[in-house]
Image 1 (spheres, one colour):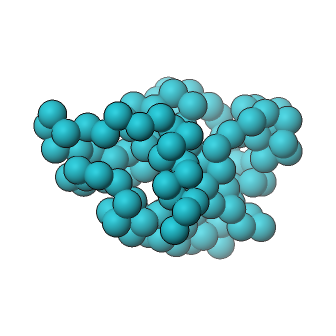
Image 2 (spheres, one colour):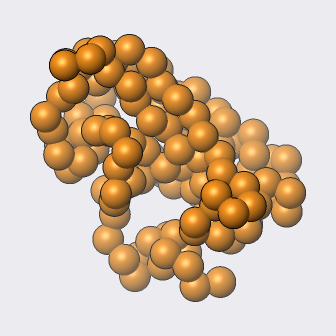
Length: 124
């Protein structure tokens, strides 16, 4: 496949990578819905959860757990974190991915760039 996430995995497009293993990669969303919005993607192309093997699904959820713990510790004014996996018409990029969307206390949203959030996550 040749979607945007496949190109990022191959190094053909830039991304702020905050976590990586042999099988998965976590990157800052290029068009974040909230400051600090992350995406966890499998390096191998899977269109949906239905065609992904259970081992990769487990690895993505383990990464989510690890990253959520880091976000809780490092993101200022964090209220909660929403996890989202789109399917069907809602899935804009047809490469499976999990969103981690930090939600903040009203009027206390941090004014950091995605690069600053990435550096914060990678520093720990």
